Image 1 (cartoon, rainbow, N blue to C red):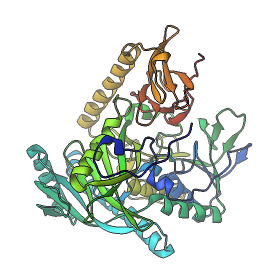
Image 2: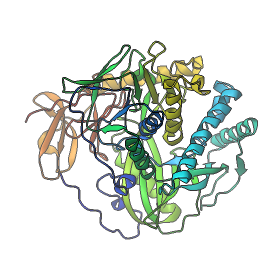
Image 3: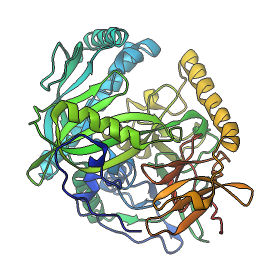
Image 4: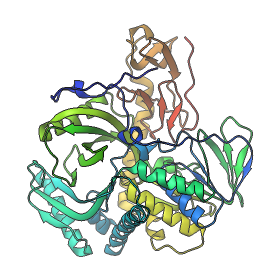
Length: 522
C-alpha cells in the first residue's frame, strides 16, 4: 500500500492541510540503522527489551560498565513512543509538584524534581562532550492557564509548591507568544532537541562498545529463574541471560505484577507546522483542557513548530482525525499556517499515582527490571530509569529507588479511586464492545476506509486499502478479549481496555498484546 506524497499547501487553516498519512518528523529527518532479527539460541549477561530512549540509554550505560548486552526490539529501533514524541527535556511535568506534596511529602516531591534535573543535566553534558548534532537548545518552559478560574487556582497552588521546594520557577502574567493567559509558571534552563539524532549517536556508541542489536524480535514469554530465558515468538529458540531490562512500554513480562490493571494508556497527537508568523521561542503546555503543547525545532535550517496535545484514552474515540484538526485550528489561530508536512501520534502509559514505575518488576524477582509509566515525560524519566536500572544491576544504591519502586505503597485513597474508575471503565468496554457496533457489510467500505462490519454472522474488522484490497480481522483483542475499534487517523485497530494496538492487517503495534489479531477470510 503506497502512501501519497505530501504536496505543498497554500495558507489556510482548513482540515485539508493535514497530510493524508501519519509520519514522524523525527524519523523522516535522520538516517536510521537497520538490524537483523535473532536467528538462533543465545546466551548473554544482559538483555534489554525495547529500543527507545530508556532501552538505548540503558544498553549504552551497561556496555560502558563492561557488560555483555543484547538489545532487542519487537519492531524497528526508535519506532515506538520515542520516535513520536514532542521531545521536551524538562523537569516541568505539568502540575505535578503540588500533587506530589499532597499525596506523598515535600521530601519525595523534591526528589522527583532532582531526578528529572539529573537526567536533563546528563543529556546536556553528553551532547556538549561529544558535540552531538541534535538541535539541542536551552529553553524556558511554561505551563499556563488561558481562561478557567478553577484551573488558575490549581496553578497558583503549583507555584506555592515551587516556592516550598525551592524550584526556580517564576510566576508571569503574559507569554512571549501571542496567547492571552490568566497566569503562567516559567521554569528556565530546560531544553528541546531532535531525539533520534541524539539516540542514533548513543546506539552507535553502544555498538562500538561491543553491544548487539536485533530488530523484528517479539518476546512472547519469559521463563524466570536464576538465569531468565526470553522465548521468541514463532521460534523454538530464545535468549538466556543474567538480567532482563524491560524498556518496552508495557513490561515484557508481567510476573504477577498485574501491570495491565495498574497502567492506563493514552494517545496524544502532534503536528509539525511551518508557520506564517515567527515563533518567539520557549516551550509551552496548557493546563486547561484540551491540553496544547508547543515548541520549535530547526530542521535543515528551517524553523518548524511542534504542536501537540488533544489526548484521550486509547481506543475510546471514534473520529480520531478530529484531534489533529483541533491542533490545526489552535496553531492556525495563534501563528497562521503555511504548511503541515507531518502529523503523528503517540501512546503513553500512566500509573495509578502518575509516578513512573522503575526498578524490580516485583519484590520477589531480582533478575527482571522495568522502566515504564512515564506519563508523557519519557525524555527525562526514561533517561533517569536507565541510570537507576544500571545502578541496580551493578549493585549500587540509588537514592531514587524507593520513590519509583514499582511495588511502592501508594496513597490509599488515590490508588483505590483511580483503580476503581480505571477497571470499571475496562469492564464497561468489555461488555459494550461486544454489543455496540454498526452492522455494515464489507461492500459498504470505500477505498482507504475501515471499520467494524457484520460478516458471516460475526463482528469483524475490515479495512479496504487505497487499491481496493480488503483486509479482515477478528476484532477480539489477543491480550484479554476486549473488542478493538477502528482508529481512522492512524488506520489501526485499538483496544479500549488496556491499550494494545494492531495494524490494519492485525499485526501488533503496541502491547500488552504479543499476538496478532486473527485474519478472517472473505
